[in-house]
Image (cartoon, rainbow, N blue to C red; front, side, top):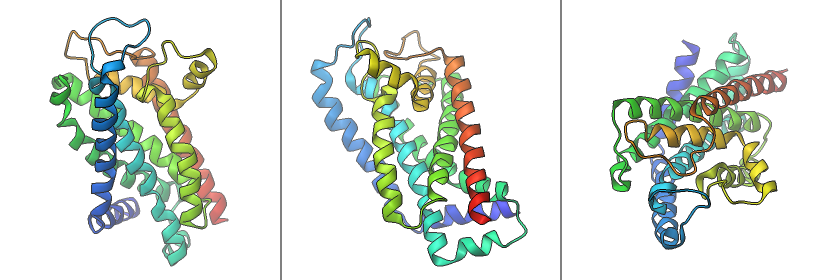
Length: 256
C-alpha cells in the first residue's frame, strides 16, 4: 500500500503539470529534426557499411534522451517535498526506506516509459519496422533504463536542499553522459581516450541494447550498435541494481 500510494501520487502530480509532458518531448524532437537533418549529408561513420541516414541513427538517442530527461527531472519532487514538509512526514511513518525509494523510482519510471512509448510511434518515419519481438524487447530495455536513471536522480536529489542546486548538478551530468553514450556519434573512429570514456559510461550499454532491439525483426544491422546485446543488457541491469541500492542507502542516511 505505501508503494502504491507514493507511486500514484507521482502520477497525479505529473497529470496536474501537463507542461512537463510537452517540454520533455518537444525539446528532444527539435534536436532530432534540426540536428538530424543538418548532419545527414555529412554522416559517414568510420568502419561501418550499409546505408543509414543520420535521422535514423539519431532516433534511438532521442528516445533515450526523453527517458533521461523525464526520469531525472521527475526526482525534483524529492527536493520540493522536503521543502514543503511532506517528505518529513513520510520519513517518520513506519515505512521501510527501501519501499519509499522503490515507490519514487517506479513513479519516475512509469512517467518516462509512457513518454518514451509516444516516440516509438515515430519509428516508421525512420524506416524502422517494429515487430512483436522488437516491441517487447524495446519496452523492457526502456523500462530498465528509466528505472536506473530515476534512481540516479534520486541518489542526487536526496542530498539536495534546493532545486537550483539539483539543476546545476544534473545539467553538469546529464548532457555529457548522453553525448558520450553513442547517441550523438558512434564510438568507431573517435580518439582512444574518448572511446574508453564511452566504454565506462553505463548509458552506452543501455543505448546499445535499445538500438539493437529496434532491429530484432529486420535483417538490417544497426550502425554503431556497440557491445553484444546480452552484455549490454547485463550491464544495464547491474546499473539499475547499483543505483537503487545507492539511492536507498542515501535515503536511509538522510533520514537518520
